Image 1 (cartoon, rainbow, N blue to C red):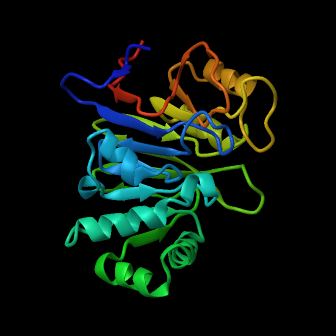
Image 2 (cartoon, rainbow, N blue to C red; image 1 turned 180 degrees about the vertical axis):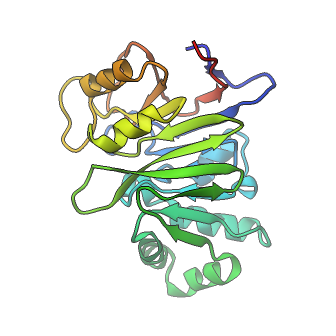
Image 3 (cartoon, helix red, strand yellow; image 1 turned 90 degrees about the vertical axis):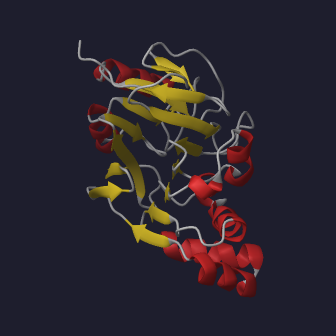
Length: 257
């Protein structure tokens, strides 16, 4: 998979920084967090405020956060990120946060629980993020990216989304958490690279993808390059890169065969 190598060189490309590659309870990596070009964050389960600094990336450069669904391992560090950016970079443009229905209320609830009503109100007054609640099928610009949301099937109690991001003519997909549903197939067909969950390598995983299903997707969409994350264990998967915490990938345009 020469199109996705460690970040270096010039030319049109996207930088994908893996902040968290582990499944919710796996213990082999931080929870979900993926930084694109230093300015757009996909999910915020990982302790982004420290991990970005360890990679030499700054919260001051972060413009947008995209949330796939509201489970703790994808969402619960967001109040800390919002507060840290507001306190450390006063006067920075407000973050733009895109997530499924319920994102704004859940962010406010967690912020108040984490910091208390008074401090959270100060954070909101100084740097209130612009929260947009999307459903599958919606598309539009997000900073320098063009984004589209895809409805995926994961939790019956939540609306769950995958996303397609495009910049420099390079389309990156993110599965969020999903089963082998029509939405993930549609997303896989629409991107050059797919950051795809693979929660289990050895057996089916309820409400998640596992190795055999991911291999089915890889075979069905040979033009798409797969980067596997949300891992509970690591084992080679033919035709895919395995994510690991701290990995930097340079995603380049893919020439047609």
